[in-house]
Length: 363
Image (cartoon, rainbow, N blue to C red; front, side):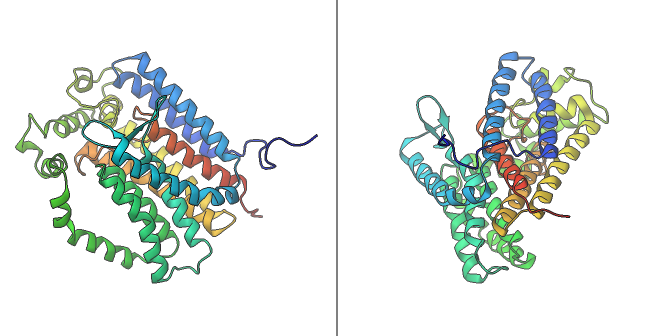
């Protein structure tokens, strides 16, 4: 009988360690979301549906061999660029042009580029001599700068920085030296005055608020001031689940999305935050281990870049909520309420599981 499906479609190739850590974070996230949403089961059920869809996507991608993912990479990158360009004309959003309304669903093309950029940089560097030559570095930078600038124009500076970071991590894992990266960082810092001139006023206000939130405590500084109060009031062990006062009295803004870590900190305290961060670190470490046993250079670069970019998600959100970094609208991975970001993250872990399932054998 003729086979209807490709030969590589078969039993799921899942990494039990990655899967266990992901399910632990997701389960704890739903518990925190129930409290952060004001015990709103509708919000929790919506998040369960979105995470369920993301897990299905992860399962499907885990079956796709890395060689097939590699073959799809230029198409995925090209489609992503076209969709980013389409947001110039068809984009919707509150004061931005980040989303494409496809009728049955609204899609944020920038989320696709969080996967497509490290895939494309890894695809380009895979057959090259490593460490990469200056010419290869220049082309790789072009690959990541095109979508970064398109996303920054929407404007969505937070996502643009994450997309750029995913490409930079790929270059670093390919052998680019630290001093070169510091050189690029120095040039970016020198260009900061130019960036200030092209930034939107609300983005400038975020920088001003980061530097001195108390200058406008009832306006732009309100979010971060209330967030820090909630974080500090949790103390070592927290006030207990469902007992957070700052969040339930609605002092903390966006408490079930970008600032959900403030709710978690208030109710579960420093110990709860440390335990969550430990699980996150274990997840990143497992991703780097998967990268180390990958069959080829392209898969190794992709798995490593996805793992380190996930770490940046956690770092930026934690810094944002605690006032160490400016507010840039980055959700806490797999904890914050939201669909597109969660599905993108789980798709990335599906790629890691594909790489794990087709790993080289180590005796």
